[in-house]
Length: 361
Image 1 (tube, one colour):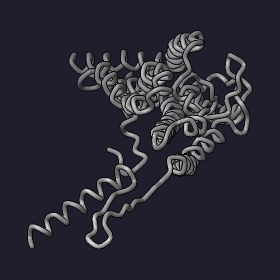
Image 2: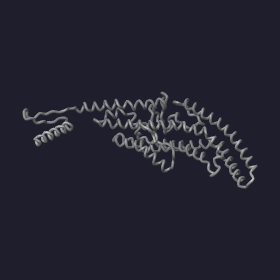
Image 3: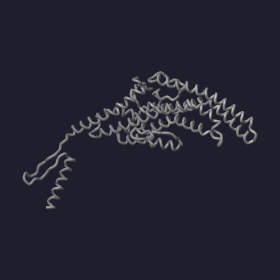
Image 4: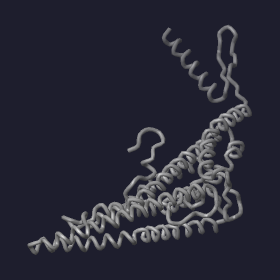
């Protein structure tokens, strides 16, 4: 009896394998002979089901992109240099300064365009507070100078006089930085823009290549319709991953604007305390930390743009042929940024630190 039961189990297993592979199976019966049973799903219905499922799920990332577009463009269109209308939010547009909302130069008004009024108002408020705090820091520098002068005058030992002379030298350096800091920041922003314009020019002159991001966002339904069977889901996953990184860049660069503005507003106070901070070890830790942070925030954009061109823009043709490989190019963004930050010893938050699901590091 055990042998008969084993034969029946093998026959049942064989029948299930045929159903999953061919959609049908043949079962032998002692009373009625052989009988064919199966679950038949015509290829056309399978393709229609996958097509419908992919389109329904793609509505979520599409709505998220529309929301980011509404915030960045304010229902207005951006005209590219080739005359085409850009009505979607893209990482490429963000990194190539297509959206005035993400401009970090508080000393220069942006040109007329979407969200330019809002961006200019924020810049004016930041500039007003910068000037007010700078005037307050000038008064503070005068008080510090009087204090150092009095201590230098009443000092009785040569060691004390040497120490206060060093403080007076540091005070003079801090005073110069107080009046020149905004020029230094403007120069760094201009240098960053030079690198960005250079890379953007290289992108615009490459007329034979369509960036993967633009290809995916503008042809999502066309790609789903043209794909065969469940291969449609590969384009859906690519679309979702692309939107995921767009959200990360959107959040990172929106907070970048506020971080740069805040660091510029408090910069006069950092310069005012320069002489006090150098007491002891002769190093201005507060100023050095502030300078590294703002330099990182300014020059992170051309670094991101370079990574984007290498891994995303140049993968346009690959996305058309093998969408699965294009997904790996997107995931490589985090690792590439981490490698560059480690090589250049750039500190601060990066793409990996932005967690849309769960807690960050």
